[in-house]
Amino acid sequence: GNSVTQMEGPVTLSEEAFLTINCTYTATGYPSLFWYVQYPGEGLQLLLKATKADDKGSNKGFEATYRKETTSFHLEKGSVQVSDSAVYFCALNFYQGGSEKLVFGKGTKLTVNP
Amino acid sequence: GAVVSQHPSWVICKSGTSVKIECRSLDFQATTMFWYRQFPKQSLMLMATSNEGSKATYEQGVEKDKFLINHASLTLSTLTVTSAHPEDSSFYICSAEPRDSGLYEQYFGPGTRLTVT
Image 1: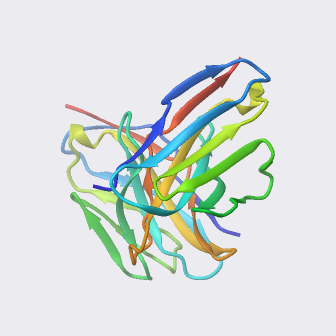
Image 2: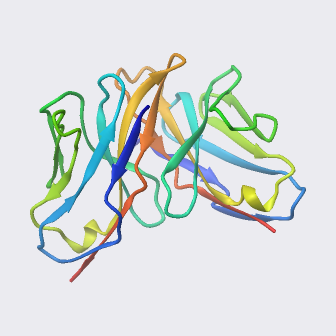
């Protein structure tokens, strides 16, 4: 089946600290991988994605590399800011019944303190 | 651009009543809309996929007679929780896929918190 496992939170960091949120997946076929972010009171927003092995997705200083050999898509940022405080979801997509669907991890809450 | 709204943002209802949640794409037309359910500290679980003008496709284990989905236009989908019970209390999130976007993208609403007493 298809599933996503991401590290349990919450994660609390000081501003300018290095961030890693681990994500591993199980999939049949060759999914695309995504990181979504949910800021307080808002809907999920696509942060970055990678569509094939060894691709690196990047946006707003965040990066994640699609590692097929380790079935991972870890999210990293070199220097976090208070404004990065949010819940981060790792996800993959697959096709079923003629439509494309997303499978999400449980989310990791990040709090960045000044 | 690509904003999705949900209404209401939260609702409290009595057991046995029905509740309707609206999902609107504000600045684009959505061929497909998705409804998710999220329990505390759990991931989003896809409930159903709806295409404009056709019946929704429900995921395994989701009662289609309990969770009625209507996608009457390219900018509006509704989820009605019929005869609600306390176990239906949850966070319901919709997303919309732009029509003819050429790329797979879902834009998410902010969610609706349902509490059934």
